[in-house]
Image 1 (cartoon, rainbow over the protein chains, first blue to last red):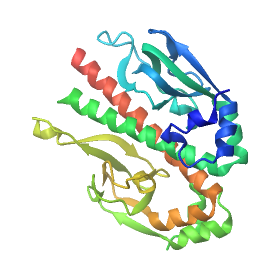
Image 2 (image 1 turned 90 degrees about the vertical axis):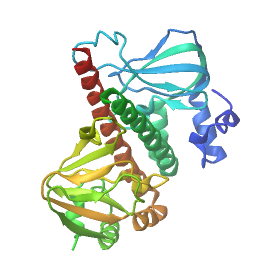
Image 3 (image 1 turned 30 degrees about the horizontal axis):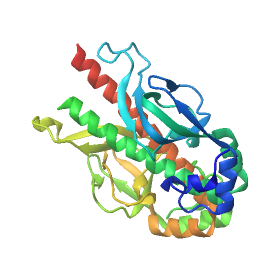
Image 4 (image 1 turned 45 degrees about the horizontal axis):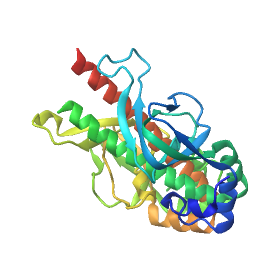
Length: 155
Length: 157
């Protein structure tokens, strides 16, 4: 469990009440990971929602077909900076990870049990709406970044 | 005129109660677009959420490139039953892509401000709609990343 006040620092939780933050804090914990740790892999169930406290996380996309020799570990598709959420797929159906996350620098993260969070959504639709909207905006930001990358690749 | 029965076909509205379907129907209208017609442009303010009833719509974005043939790049295709113009429900409510009919297309246009007003009164409705918005945006992200992989694959050869 973490302190609900800690969650207040993150804009992702803006608009939530103290009681809602308390409910999320109970299903969250803080972890530290050394560099080069693979936090999660693309294609697996999204069981946790993460927030980066400090450090740096790189995101990679691995197409289903053979690995590109120029990108043996997958195509870099983004970097997570402190304060940002990742593993957003935990809040977006079908709840399957759409990228792989690797720790670039020793990092401290908040991990939220996604199944427990989705269960909270069933009894608190306002929380569900606010957090799903944040997730949609985060995915849109990733989409904008992917289009910039695509434009650069084709230029 | 858009009927509640028509709206009920689409996942975004499938779980709405009858009175809510009626309310959404009253703020919706049908439109027909010819092939190559622009439905909305990137960077325009969003006024409507769209559902494609029949036909096909391309989503494109502008790129800066020396190659004049690459001015606008398609990154996804909307198929019948899908919604588009999702920025209408996400601040800052500016279209992040251009939508163009690739075949004659029949769409439902829903007044976004009216829809948000209905959502303020009904959080369950708001959540169900936002779930679909997130899911559809995620699908577009995956499609774009796949295109990115194909682009790198082509460069590699």
